Length: 255
Image 1: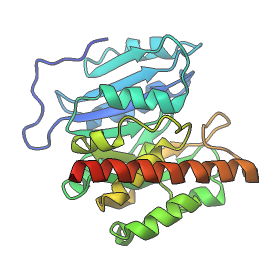
Image 2 (image 1 turned 45 degrees about the vertical axis):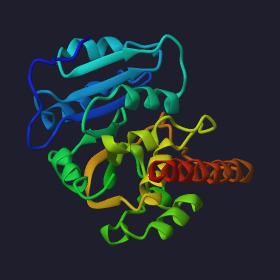
Image 3 (image 1 turned 30 degrees about the horizontal axis):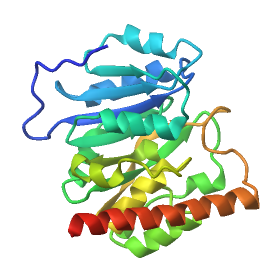
Image 4 (image 1 turned 90 degrees about the vertical axis):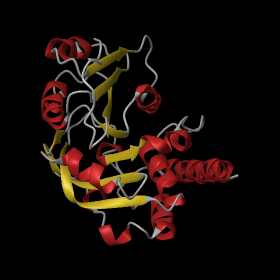
C-alpha cells in the first residue's frame, strides 16, 4: 500500500508520522487505526511494519484503503523492538509518534503532543486503561512539573518507576539521529531508551492529560506479573549501557 504524496503537509503543523508495529493483531488493529486516522491531515502518514504475522493482520490493514497508510511487511519475525525501529526509520515526518496495535487514541492527541514538541525533543503523556484492571505500577502517572527534572527522571527511569510507555510518546525528527539506530543490545524497553535520550538532552516534556486509552489483555507485551530478580538486574544493566551510548551520541553531536 503506497502513501499519497500529492498533497503537501500542513504548513503550520508540519508533517506527522505515526509508527506502529503489528504482530497477530487482527482482533483490535482496525479499531486502533480508526482512532488514529481522524488525527492525521493530508500529507501525514501512518507507517505500519507487520512483524510476519501468522493471522490476517496485514490483510485487515490493507482493506482499510486509506492512502495515508504505508504498510511494510517483514519477511521474518524480528520482535517488537526491531519492528518499531524499522517503522521509525521509515518515517518521513517532522513529528514522529509511536503507536501500539490495540489501543484507542483520544481526539486531540496529535495537536496537544505537537504543541509540547515546540519546546522539547521528546514528549510522553499519561493514558487511561480499559479491558482489564492495571497493576499498581501501571497506575503511576507523569507530572508536567517533572519535565525539566532530568536527573530525577533518569534515576526513576533506571529504577523502573517512571511511566514512560512508547504508545504515549513522540519526538521531533531532529532527534532521530540520537534515537536511531537503537543500541544493538537493546532487546526491550525501546520506549525507555527514547525517554533516556530526551532526558539526557534536557529536552523532555510530560503531558499530564490522557492522550489515549490503553487496552489491557492477555497478549500485551508488558509483563502481567513481577519479574524475577535476575531479569530485573539484566534490564537495569542494559539501561545503564544505554545511558553510556546515549551520552556518547549527544557528546558527538556537540563536538
